[in-house]
Length: 270
Image (cartoon, rainbow, N blue to C red):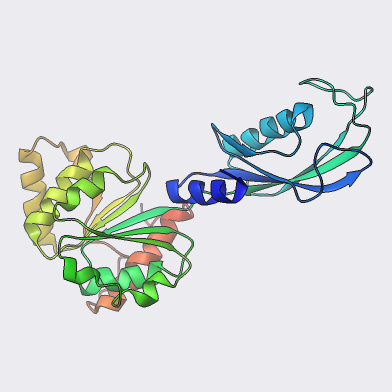
């Protein structure tokens, strides 16, 4: 695939990468200004000229990824026999400057159950730079006309009709944030159990009352989950102190709390 397809591939997989662009050429060089390449942790797509130039850029791009860097950088290479090199000489005679732009992985959020609250949460999240999976066991809840405004947002939104939604949960990428809010408490419980059988999710939230959560905790223990594992599920969800029960209020509260997770901000007292 070319560099543009590679960026779309990384976004779809929830992976970070670095976009490399030749921004200036003086004299002779393997590629012209505007040539691009994408570097991920394990793969490279397209080329900015090969040889020492490209190999050195790949090394730097992967170091940026490992450090979680977000600031763009430039690198300049003299392509002559006197230049200090690590990966072999290039004697084209020119000077090349490249720009390295880190492309952060978009967070993945999955909403299981799109009743009133789930739908409002999808609407809020669709305005953010995230990947959203909207899952429901009821096909009529996923009418594309209902989600017309959601699908037009900034987020990359995927609609899933899944009679057994727990199978979709098992296929989510590592680090995904999961919200469980289906129309059926039995379905909610299966989803909670499935989530706890994964060790690589980001956060897991369950909508419901303290009474519901008390029953779920008891049943999850009976399924073999210990208290430390069960505590990975948050119930109730949203920012403490926001008590409104309107679907839009709950959705905004949940989304705001999730943004704090994205930015590494702890709840007061946690």
